[in-house]
Image (spheres, rainbow, N blue to C red):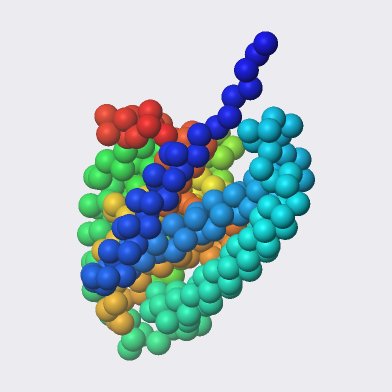
Length: 325
């Protein structure tokens, strides 16, 4: 007779106890924490809430249909069933409270963050507030450095190089020939390029988009009447409400680009319009709600999402992470 297998809860208990001890230590010592780490703690909270929700589903299922084997049939006793049901109600109540607390935290974070919302073209028309030369110099230096970074994945490397090509080719030309271009839109344009690259990557055509953008830059510089900093289709993408324009690919790549290349552009200098680490996230939340869960867990499950979208490792470290994932 085939013996039925039962899963061991021990690994989950060990992991949960480690997390519990770590968080107890953090609360007791209250060390200074970087903003990015705070975001990761929030993602961890959402992940743990998701775990708790799965535990509740498991407990509820066992209440409704427990094993016929006496050894695994404790919940069939009436008193135990009532007790267990009350426990589940209480756990659900605490889960709801925790979720509401996180929602409140999100609202407070968004309200207080200095980089939550980038200026629109209207907001940024006051030239007295923007140091044009300093902003152009900072973006040129950071994008050039970012193009030389190995992000661990070939597609992200190519994306960084493509953005630097666009800036050093088209924006450099605009700065010398069309001085009226709106420099305050630089961070928006970069995000829209990444959004479009993510869309083409999701459709299996990232190289086509890179070549098309480079060709557009070259052709635009040969046509003095062309006053556009980026192609119209990329500009329009930034206004799109079409769900499929906002992809997991763009979310993953933007996070990695921000972390390893563009972080110096998240500046508190009020004379320079900064990059917003949440720009693509906020657009995706608004237009593609199917990715809400991914947004909440995109740091804690980054290796999984990298594998899901099919990024190609460019280094031994990335390959090792891919094996672990």
